[in-house]
Length: 86
Image (cartoon, rainbow, N blue to C red):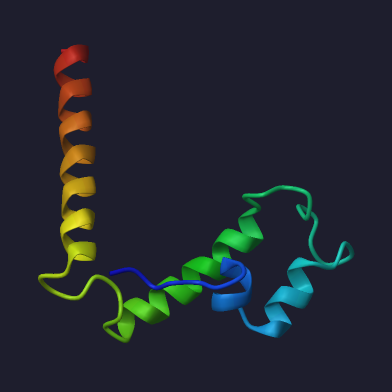
């Protein structure tokens, strides 16, 4: 359904060069942060490439249905917030 990773998402999805940058204190200011902006940017690039290659949420897959459900819930929560504010 989803893209499986082995030891860690970093090892599976990020190149050795990117990992070296992310694990170097001199090149990665947010190294102690689990959700550093630099790490998220690198994962976003990988996700976009997988999407462009047609590997993300193929039509009629459970992955696509999960994405549709999540987006629907996002829209509903926005609507409920707007109704509450009105």
